[in-house]
Length: 394
Length: 89
Image (cartoon, rainbow over all chains, first blue to last red; front, side, top):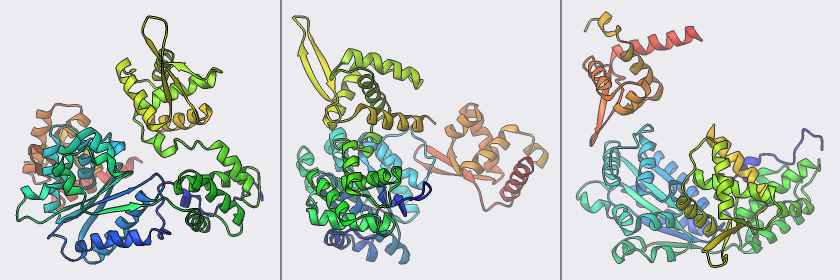
């Protein structure tokens, strides 16, 4: 294949944000969602709905809900109903109810000020806007755990009992909460929990055959005909299955394998391309996870990655990481955060599985924390973070 | 207000340019972009509102201003701004 040709027909179809028209092996769940919300197409003012979607990473929770959102919005608009589907990743808004609501309001008023009112007032403002525009919203709170963790029962209660303080007024906001498991909402108080748990859709992990069907579907959308042999899809599906049936992992692997094929000027994406891609991909933490980190979490992680890139050691002490972080902050022209704050970031990164921390006693004078990057190549991580931070800066 | 008095204010013209660029904004947001204080911005917005050129919507304590698209004066000003910018390109 010439240097100007590619195995890809449209590589955007493998992008993390792309939602296919058809979701293989999720037809039943999509139908169920449609049933739950069918009232929105008939009597939207009479009721609201709350649905929970659970499932492991890469089981299609986000794609399912976005497909549903696009379908129902199209259908409602055809019938002259002003329905908006708003999908929010709570982790991107640090689990803050205020920031989440601000985002919803800014869908209607893009330059709405960020300061000068509370989350409760913002909720009132949102209802005022919806009443004025006779609009209805299906609000999807993805990574709902993040909101529960930060705001607890109070926020969930406010969102779910919204209508009770608006007696005899049209109903406006329905909720879809997406989370990995119901464990996260066990910590909520009984009343908040009871309002949420009525409709639960659980997405099982994909089987290898199902993953093959999903990947074949994407291959037909993203690659030129006959460029991806059956063996390549099977191997990718096998690898994705070993990653807990994670379809997203498989799709990303496919994209990377295509890139290897292009780089080597091949006519087809061979299984060897998949193997190369698999060895280069860092399975524990992927692009989407890195992108949703806060700026200083990214800066701190970048400093750790740079340390490992420059030193042939397996561990970096927190003190050394802090020094490297100060240098990175200077490079990006930001004020470094305090030691306590960095400690919190380290805990977040450790929870996400990006870094591993170990506390070791050094003689009788206290303890030191050591950080390692167990499964992620420092070079890859550094490149990814630098790109993201540069983008944010510009 | 006379047309010459109305157009004599540099800040008023800047407010109109800001609102035609961003669509709508609260007073503090406009003041920040102008580099002047809240009171001054509020004063000019009142003049513009009295002339029917801008209108506001209230959300609790917040007032969001936008150009009044139903006013012929607003349309004339927008044409002026657009024509002016195009000539300067």
